[in-house]
Length: 477
Image (cartoon, rainbow, N blue to C red; front, side):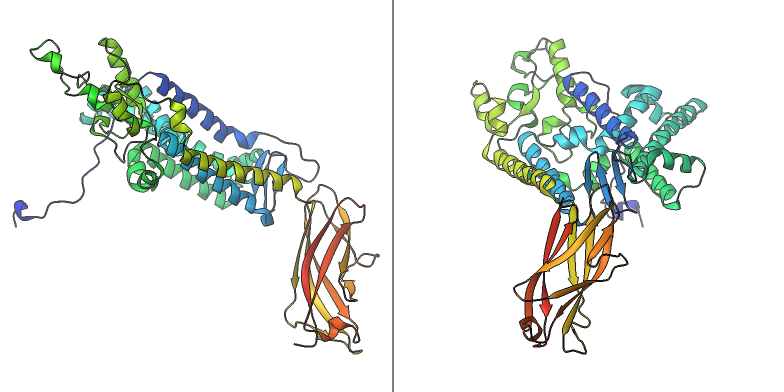
């Protein structure tokens, strides 16, 4: 069968992209954001925070063994997962807010894939040269020089990748201790496995896949359209000013040409390899490097800057008519963005309020269902309950267990202590206690199907108390 009879391939091999170095305000902003985010990621596990005795002194720690999350002075317990859920919701709303106002600024500036890809490209440019040198090296046959440059680049990439994977595991254990364990090969196997996996993904995603992660693996480019409207500011090309484009400015008819000289500078600096002059595209991450490149060319040829700029579709008719666009604040403060901001702030205020009003005691009650009740020899009805008492303070506390009900109920606690109905809970620990509640034969609670009552747990020092509602099961089942 001849090749001409074969069906056309639905897949195309990746064309490597070699972004050109560019200078400008947006490139400078990206450098600052990259440095800040990398510093936060790599250094945060090493920040110390004194919480007192018997507690970790790492400022940010996800303690899986102790089932606790520490963030400076904040301590989150498993039953308080709503704080984490609230933060995730705030992150989602924040992403919606920034996208509706300024397009994919998250993707262009702070997404981990963008940050580490920028870092890898910086290393690549430092070792192999700028765009033209890297293109020539890519197309050249293998030689000792090409092998040396490639191996040097890959080794530096690998060092960065190992540091990235290593920094991640430091968030889950005491960083200095874990570092010593890793160096002496005495750490848990899961630590080495996690570092290996994150090293491999960072090396491959940042060094080789790059824009393919954004285009094919990330779902956000396909969702962003729902977050944007005609008032959204995003990177765009003023085609009414740049077209028709042409390079020969001294040729006949040059006066009819637009400002674009078709220099391809905007394409050469794009990390995803698109031409912004073709309009909005899913591949655009709104990094704004094309703005810096185009502004530089416009300044050199004596034209007004801003041929490529942050624009809104709603401003295009105004600019075509020669009128100035609307102020930036009118694009940012719109109904959609104000709704997102209000929801974001409402959840944030709610989380802060919940953080400051939460009790130092945690109590949960679970009736023992098998059996629902026991009839004692004197005819009394007894129910069993499993109580979980959490001491959220840094000191051992003794608690008194009580109950309140409209009916007469007696309480008995399984305890090794000398005081009846008293239990001691160590600092930052949870105690499981078995409690028996009994109704005498003549009491209403013993004969009716369900009786509501409330458990109380009170610090004997009088500093805090907590309650939980439950039911008492009687004979009338």
